[in-house]
Length: 116
Image (cartoon, rainbow, N blue to C red):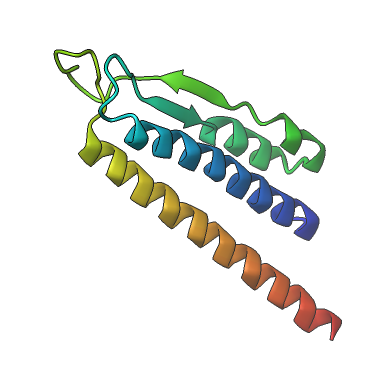
């Protein structure tokens, strides 16, 4: 894999995970808002397709789907946020963000060690 491509792909993934984090945080903040339905940010399939081609030019064109979903049965007030599911989504997204950041940091350290 081209080093420039892998760095760009990881940076793109981190940026997309930040968008997902914002959506999850919004879901948690609106857990008591009547009629609120949770939002979800989906990008993995599009990013994976681009990574398979190893085309750095296509990275900015990752398709991001902003979806409105139900976490389960809506309460009588119409809100369908499931806090347990949202907290699990937040933990998973944070873990994946941190793992990507660590891979990116290691990539930079390896590049620096080659240069020095």
